[in-house]
Each structure stands twice: as C-alpha cells, then as structure tokens.
Image (tube, rainbow, N blue to C red; front, side, top):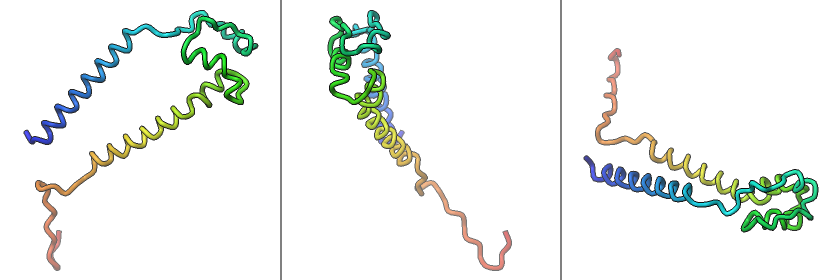
Length: 126
C-alpha cells in the first residue's frame, strides 16, 4: 500500500472517531434551556412584557433584546434572518469549500499508469 494512501486512511479514521466521540458527548449533555415552558402565543402577542425568568444564555438575549437589536416584528423572523444570518453565510462558504475540495481530489490527472492512444499514420484506416 502506498504511504500516501495509508496516511490518508489513518487520518480519515482518526477524524471519524473524533466526530463520533464529539457527537456522543454533545448528545449526553443536558440542554441549558429546553423551552418546554415557553408560551409561544404570549411571546408572539406581547414580546416586550413576556416573562422569561427561566430562560438563560442565548435564549434570554433573544427574547429580552429582540426588538431592541433588530428591526423585526416577531421573534421567529429575527432569529432566522438576523441572528442566524452570519451562520447561514458561513454554511454557504463551507459548502463552496467542500465542493472545491471534492473537485480537486476527484479531478482526472495523467498518471504513470495511463497510456495515450497511439496516433494513426496518414492513410491508415481505423
């Protein structure tokens, strides 16, 4: 086996193992705020006076400072188009980089094992 292929295989196995480990750790952790006690109708109708004393972290910022930080009229619109805007842009850059990487890896190259077809002399038929 070629040294490059062996190194690539080992690298991919290590990367896959790290990803599986990280997914298991994240899945076993407790959420900071599950939103089970959120009254969506009350939040939609009157977001300024909504009681979110149980929310913490990002959930509290989104509910408390939504109308002050954004020009949105409701919380869902502000989360999707304002708070997640940079995230969506980053995901599109990652997609473009992944496509470019696949094109580089899967491109056709003239390797040593490939032979070019012999040119036919003039007057010979195929």
